[in-house]
Length: 180
Image (cartoon, rainbow, N blue to C red; front, side):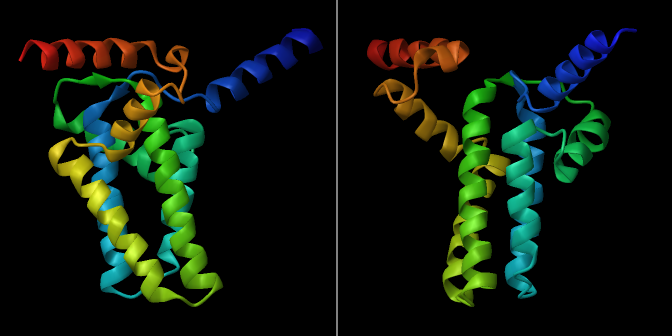
């Protein structure tokens, strides 16, 4: 194998590592959200603000690489989901990635508030908002970040090329709404 080929293979592996899956298995996304609910609830129930760092890292890793660098993502996709024997339900990846980015921003803000500024009440309010959003995703398949992404696409902030499957979903919903 030549040095050039080895570099090409390495670049391909790195590109694959830092890609986000599209489509995403909705069941896995919902199970990851349930894990976030559990971790965030433990943060509040046991007054352990350091857990916010782990939660923020998880969101960062999932926004950057999908489940590849996320311990919770790996647990769900490699262990939990396969054992459930439930048919996969593919959903568009870009809105889920956007939602993970929002989770990262919120959990990082909470961690900085709690650990950097000693503002636990404010941090815990932010953590409560994370619990609400993750509960809606895990229990009701309602992804707030995905809804925001759809609105941003609709008003032109997110280009249509970012998510062709989102365009199809949005147009299907629009035609259903118009026919009702």
